[in-house]
Length: 426
Image (tube, rainbow, N blue to C red; front, side, top):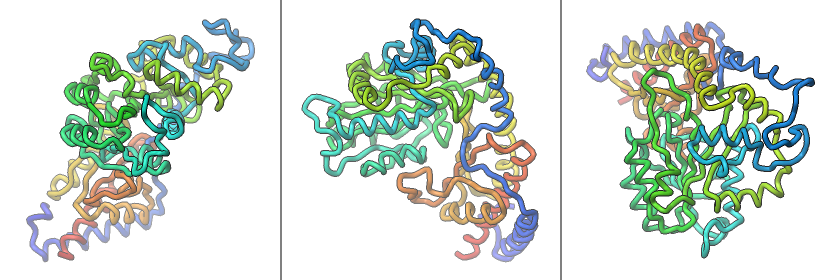
């Protein structure tokens, strides 16, 4: 039944049917969660034997001939820097390995640039009145939270199938020196699963910002998180920036949070020598060294990039069926109703769904009342302001498959119920 072509009596009848289904679901007393991209238990189990790689009888000395149990080596052990260098496609000399959270390193990067000048002749960002940051949207709420915390005006940039709208970006950054950076999730973006095209990467590298201290925050969180046998490919931003003479613009991040253990993974950042010198000056006062035993554990387990990619095939075997459940429900339930659109990503952790305009908050509220927790409507836009009130991020990874099927049944009922309510009210 296409809701957009229905008569009012037909819609009223459909509404009553949906209302009954919804009340039945509420009566089940469910407690389901698709709010965040947390790996499920089956994924966490994939890395359990990594815990046995380093134990009380192991040698704790890495390639640096440094006892990994002790203080020292601020930038991380060399073999772990090499592993992340291969993952990010940069020389390991440009890599710093941190704790378990790349988000922490992103926060520290912004914090550092708030108090230290990033380029000759530029003020620390806290001295810049009306400072601004570009935010491709829909995007990652925690990115927006960082720049919101530091008082930036956040400018939403529409996403296209090739990445953020570069025409808008080029126009804005070339004319306004108070625009200090842009957030990017370049491969399998959060939440749409879009991978930036080669043209988009080259245009980013060739930006001519009015602000000499403009920075591209390149959060490559899903760089090895493929779901299909025909994965997306991403052009190397650092190589393109070197060609363009803009090697100081990108600051790159990734972690093993969704590869091994989210609470006990390893994070890394990479940047030009000039940037890394600036950042390490801050880290030198912030921390003596990070957990080198955990770095050693990860390197001994994976050995190299090939080992990481082989491990990710196991994740793909777990995650691909979950995405099929989500996409199958959307195609079977929402497509016939004549509203809504969604992404079908080749990787990453999310499916981005646009329900009927003006109903996303209502859908999320209905789901919560029925026992299904979703990411808040509007969270994928700066300050939670989705101008169409339509976008909802679905995270399929955490629930077991049987619960995921139930969750999607509830989601689709709620999306259709909210659509009927809106159409009837009009």
